[in-house]
Amino acid sequence: MFVSLERLADKLYRRNPREWRRAGLESRDAAMDRLFRAEHQWRLAEFEHRRGVEVMRLAFASDFSGDRVAALIAGMGGMIQTAWSDRTELFLLDELDPQALSNCARNLEISAWKLAQSRDDMGELLLLSNEISADGSRNLSFEREMGKMIGWLDMSSQIVAEKNNRVVTRVLQSLATAVFIPVR
Image 1 (cartoon, rainbow, N blue to C red):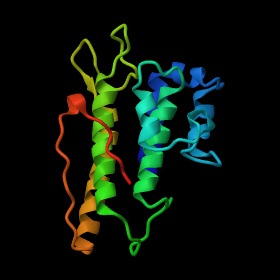
Image 2 (cartoon, helix red, strand yellow; image 1 turned 180 degrees about the vertical axis):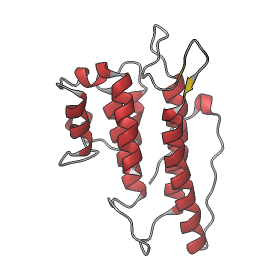
Image 3 (cartoon, rainbow, N blue to C red; image 1 turned 180 degrees about the horizontal axis):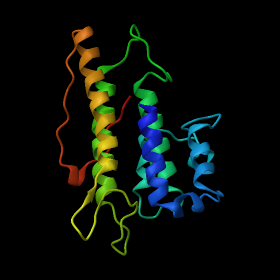
């Protein structure tokens, strides 16, 4: 899961170098190190030690002037880790909350939509991701990477729910007015 998150961060920083520059970093590699090799991973000081969906919201806030990629990725990482009961790796016998995993997947769906739709006051995308070039070719690698994570979380949710004879409630909402769902 975190490998996909790292790939997504790398792709976003490649398309949006201004974001790591906003954080005062020297390079994309320094930005990646800050996110994935940090001592307090998913709890960056610039986000006042907030975590999960609270940080993800910043990435799409029009008045946010910090590193949007860091906000999105650190928020996603913290949210996933929360859904995993604050573990960094999973084992077959670990007990997880299937509803938390499902809510996490729904939040990733919302993030994918917001990534493609959120714009600033001038009408420019907040973060460049998928693109359709003038010749009609499409680069949907961002959506594919998000889709892998969503699929993995949904599958995990169903496996855990079946293991514990529980039902996962699906939350239906319009993506146009979507808000992030609490994971816990």
